[in-house]
Amino acid sequence: MSQDPKTGVFFYGILLIVKESPTMRKIERQMNTAIRERRNWAGSNTTVMINENNNKAKVYLHGNLIAEVCDEFVAIFDGGWQSVTTKSRLNALLDEFRPHVGVVQRNFDWFIVVRNKYFPFISGSLV
Image (cartoon, rainbow, N blue to C red; front, side, top):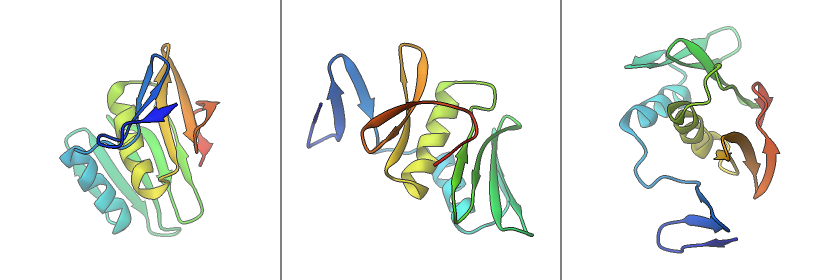
């Protein structure tokens, strides 16, 4: 595996992995800000809800739970849809709160990547 120093793109055989997007979507920046500031927020198809009892942030995409964020862990879910948008929201969140972790797709299957080690994606995984 090699990395292009200009773009940060990893090349692994024919598999192309982009870990950090140089242009995170505006909605994803707003989502991360709401989580970081622990405030409720909704924009377009994405919602952040804060539980005031335990300070845990829950992130929803189209009403489906895709992440729970607290100080101790981040739990990631596919919300029943392994879509490009779900993966994008998860990776934006992980880039900020768990920068050594990402979600990638290979041959239609999702994987969690932790420091260049691949694990099958299981909805509800704690990272």
